[in-house]
Length: 304
Image 1 (cartoon, rainbow, N blue to C red):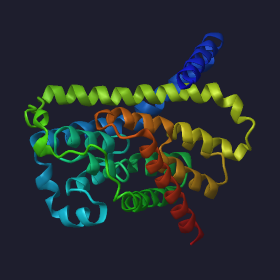
Image 2: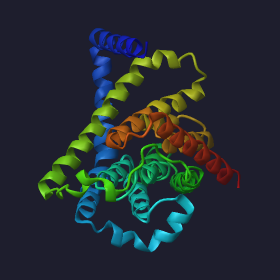
Image 3: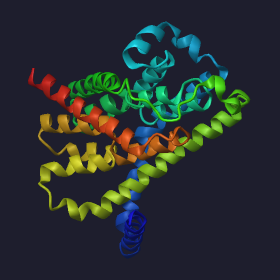
């Protein structure tokens, strides 16, 4: 039944594109534009640089001073501190990519990776403060409120999911395939990071098209809720359309959208986390939880 529904939707989408190509080409272009201007400059450099650090085996040294607090608070190794900071600085989906890289290199267990996905999958300041705050909401103060709420919600979320455990857990010491793995060359790092970034762009473009296809259904909703539902599908499109709302409502909606990330971001991260095999429902619950917490924090700050 699931396969039938997915196939039916894809065929419907293809039919709509054929009968109205101009409309969907325009949406596709907007998606590519959003990726090129708002996502690619933030993610590609960090993907390359963090991959180099991981491949050189220096991550443990960088993050060793955080070993005790992160073990006690989040139930993870100290390396989670570096992944958290880099995810906050660089944005989606770098945190998921780094978590997957650490797991694949045998640096963390599957349980630690599951816990890290609850607070190491974040948006960055260039998007939150620069794009959403300054450009879309035309209020830098809102941008900083969104960024603070985003960070705090991630940390609270990490505590909430700090005791979950993965089935068939393993440690690096008993995974011989990982122990034999040769470090990637610089060329391979560039190639892998570029491919990962292009995957993100393709997903964003696809979901701009999907939003355009289902937009007639949004007309049945109250006009103020349309940007929120669009943001639950694709984060950039939702934040763009939130700009038409009353300022404080727009800020709260954007807070939820950014921390939840939307279906598009969930799929981007799922592509990065493929070898981790984290259940999609668990990762979705983690992001939904962070989105709700972030919106509540933003509401409280705006009330104060």
